[in-house]
Image (cartoon, rainbow, N blue to C red; front, side, top):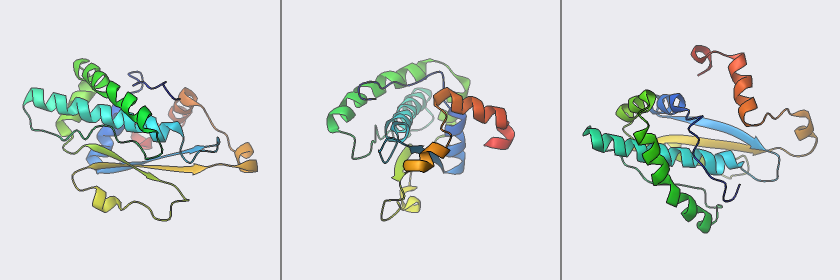
Length: 180
């Protein structure tokens, strides 16, 4: 996925961001079979999503005069090369401005309720210690990104649905009221 970054307006998942803000954080779990500790969704896509939302919310709140929210910028894990980080950082403001200008009601609700920025931390079974989420929550809405690498025969027995298939499968099994 190098040089293939974007911010999807088709799947903003603002309802999930709003619920994370209301609950003080959330955990996102995904797995990879490609020999990496974390799939690209957890190492790049979710952190980009958080950075864009943080920046757009800061723009909205400044424009509306309802108080400031820190927009810490893009926070990617240490294993993402610095050159790639800086290329992605160059796009965050553009995507945030697009979101800010889109006039989406659910975004406005999020912007009014969000008083602490979304911040990612990564957790993997191979890590000796897990992040101290309580300490990290000081002034942040923590998004814990948890992953497990799937190897060998276990991977063959596991059904892995791709992108939109995951969403359609989840929606067919639960309603919004029951599932979140």
